[in-house]
Image 1 (cartoon, one colour):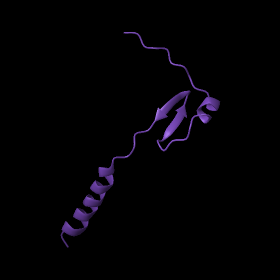
Image 2: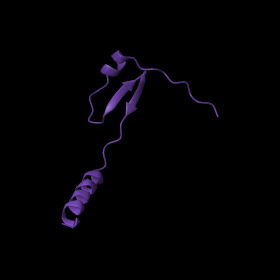
Image 3: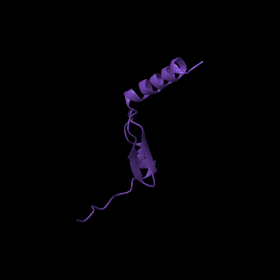
Image 4: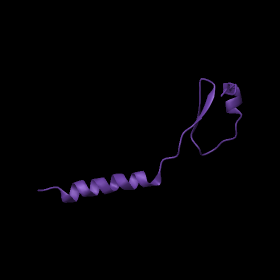
Length: 58
């Protein structure tokens, strides 16, 4: 299988892209889109803190 040729994006072309709320970066000419944080992750951290605080032996 052959890979399609990639066209590098310039910083000027990247700057002309419309604004978005999705985290996007230009790295070595490639546009990188970061995944959004999962909503569950903050709840899991809170649950871990609650468990550690209230279930630890005194």
